[in-house]
Image (tube, rainbow, N blue to C red; front, side):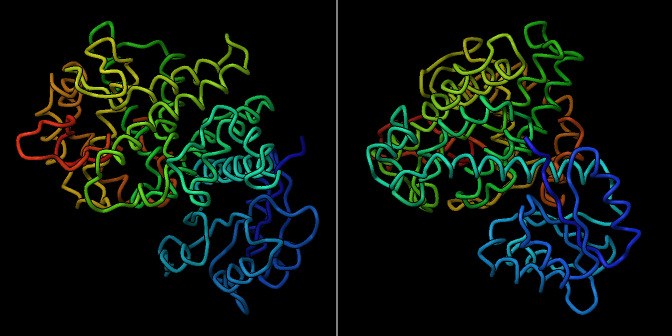
Amino acid sequence: MSLPLILIVDDHPEHLTALGELLAPGHRVRAAASGIKALKLACLAPLPDLILLDVLMPDMDGYEVLAELRARPQTVDVPVIFLCERDGVFDVERGLMLGASDYVSKPVRPAVLLARVRAQIALRQARQALQHLSAPAAGSAAAVAVADPSGFAGSTGSAGSAGQGRHAAAGLAELTDAGHWSAELALALATLAEQREPGARQRGARVRALVAVLLAELRRSGPESHRLAPQQSEALLAGVPLHELGKLALSDGLLQRPDALDAPQWAQMRDHARQGASVIDQALQRVAQDGPVARMLRQASAIALHHHERWDGLGYPDGLTAQAIPLGARLTAVAATLDALTRPRVFRDPVPAQQALDIVVAETGRQFDPSIIDALQRVAPQICACLQTLDLLEPSDAADVPDVLDAPDDRGPVQAAGDPGEPREPGGAGR
């Protein structure tokens, strides 16, 4: 497999040289010293897998170049990362509206840039694999058989909006077969689901970062049952971003509904846990069972299936209690709830980090594992700082957070007075 091709666009030759040397070991590189030259190189075969684009350039600035790239059929889908001066004027909203995938501040920090590059290339590979598998005519028996070997499409997703969900199982399996699996790819696949749900951008990375903080504290002073070996911790953290993969099967109307879900809609929403685990399990069957990918996929499947379980047994889908709930799922439930409470959702406003912490702590022994909540309280200042920092970071900058939550959807069906109905998560945290 050929190395990814990156086009670097910057009007300063020394910047082109430095970035080229940084990227060269694992990538093919093209360089353009102007926007006009960039547009020519961007359309040459083979097309670039990613474009690093300086914002401030003479004659044609980065915004103009990006607008032209998005207007051309050959480059409309090529991801673009903006390079902008840390103290300069950069209109984040304008850049994202024009179609930028991410942005990095100058002077560039090598580790940050390489992490962003890996994430965008992995996302592009994931999209291409899923699109490739949908090549048969839409709606044909062949298309359904290839794209949905386990009935993942179902009735929960609309024909257009949940199309990616119909191909997720086969796409994930193809990528694992091809040896393309990585932590970046896990985040990339999570992004496919996040892009369809308002307020969910970078959720997988944030949840993973917060789980890492809790894991580290449990390793220092938690009970023996909560202390994982390094390999186990690594696999768990790599699987966390896929906890909501099953939402690829849900329609936009369901994901973006601002009011309460009725009983049938709530049943569809709850089913995403099983759907996500099913997709991951199919990929698991196609890899070496004693390798690191299999370890990660087993953790990811358990987390996807059980992150809506509750310590008291009132969760879903299996009503597991206490230690019967996999540790990764218990950790993800706590972290995801904190994250969801502090993010705007279509059905409620966010709360401050300390208030979210208080809400979660109040659920110890009911919704959450008491040992995990004890650890959470010991690192409360760090968790609050992370929640606030993750809110202020540039896109995809979770890599800068020390290896450190999305919550179960609690709106539930409309209930008649006195009807206990489904158990609800604290404070309207999420779905």
